[in-house]
Length: 251
Image 1 (tube, rainbow, N blue to C red):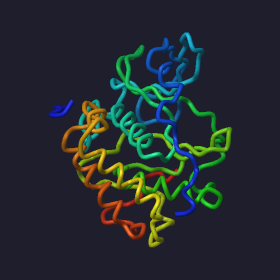
Image 2: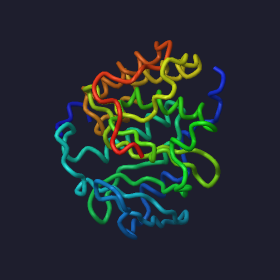
Image 3: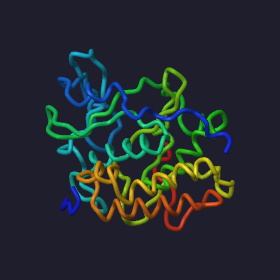
Image 4: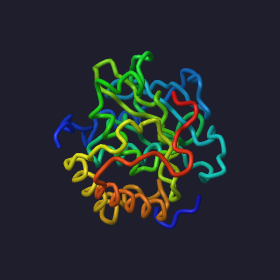
């Protein structure tokens, strides 16, 4: 892909700016353990070993990405990393630490593996984690998530909810498809709007925009900044549509 630029209720602490797992993920020895099931692209469970210890990770090589008509080839792994960086800068939601690096199957995204309860997903978490899911809904508006399935919301062993699978985000064209429409018509908390407003400013220029160059095109960065500006001014969560607003399958 050519690059012309290399309120109450929302008080859960966000992801740390410098997660201690990042250096290990970025530089540790990467060993593939096997394919993860039910993935449309080649997605591997891997072990990462280094001087600081070892951890499990999810490795998505660029060479294993299925070509899509509406996303440039070989860019899904970059979008995974960009989503982590946006969530980290925004302060929510919890996206596992993710880096872009070389591996046994070539360059790709490497994300910290989160141990989770497979019995839980968006539809089982909505009642007890509504505030966190409101933030996920706003995050998806900003990153233009084209595939927010219920199973992308993971309940970790420590009780925290993580969101994963962001390879089809950041298109410059409207593509939002998500299962999270339960909050449509509700007021958007002012605290969340303030966070998104700050993010919009950082996307328009400065060190954070520089950090995203090479992961997203200039047009995609500009579109993300425009969406963040619009979300910061939303009085209410939007209604579904236009177009096809739901992913398939929903979980």
